[in-house]
Amino acid sequence: MQEELGEGDKALKTAFEAVDNMEFDRASEAFEEAIRLGCQYMPLALNYSGTFAFIRGDADLALAAFNKSLDLDPNQAQVWAKRASVHMEKCKHPRSHSLRFCLCFSCVFFFAFLFLLRLFGVVGADRGQADRSAAMADFAKAIEVDPADPDVYYHRGQVRFLMGDFSDAAADYTKSAELDKKFVYSQVQLGVAQYKMGQLNDSLVTFRKVLKQFKNSAEAYNYYGEILLDQGNFPEALEKFDTAIDLERTGGQGKKVRNIMPLVNRAVLYLQWKKDAKEAERNLRSALECNPPFPVLRPSLYGSRAWLRLTIVGSGS
Image (cartoon, rainbow, N blue to C red; front, side, top):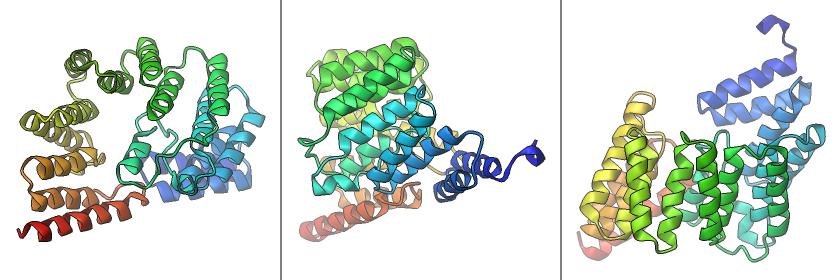
């Protein structure tokens, strides 16, 4: 009951309500208030505090929060996985401090934000100094804590994917899918990893199975569209991106698209296929109007639009 909660627990409840409503600034403030006032679920509050710290670009503060959370409760497989991901991206390269990807409010967000940042050039590709051994040790600890957690294998697969270890990534995605057959992302990423390994037929088979099983998954259609786009199959790729956008609208709040990637991919498609910079800009403008929950993306989206404007001027259109 609300009246039985202490002030810190009330703040924690407010924080989770804000996360559910995608009010991330409000959520971050509420988590910090819960920690300051003290709450019954301090490891959880620190877990989310670390998540938001990393989104803001403060990897050191994120690592400190995850360390405190694990000190209070070392049996948190998800936090070990999050700390592993901080180790992977926390290096001496100056651009690495700009990494602000979402460390999993749920698996839906984990690494999706990282891919967005890398797409728009917010995050550098230099990973030579990343502490991979510490990251892998944390993933091993997470699996020791809970060997049946599909999320941990998925997260490790994502890290391996970003490092270019596509074979090991595929093995982790497969394990994650075996543990949770209803989790679409591990199966989608398996198809992407297969494609990266040059296994085109296996990748297409995987995606067709995913689309058959997850008919209402916007992510499945979007990722499949990316494969088709890379193959130069523009008409079918456009069809997949349009389906993803329609599913986002019908599955979200009202007509608002919450995942901007299909719109961004649609912009890329129109630029590559029809050299139509104006239509590409229109799609990026739509992505901006979606008000992505992570403000760091907005300058990059505006930068993409500026680049498209140069394309328009250069083409004389």
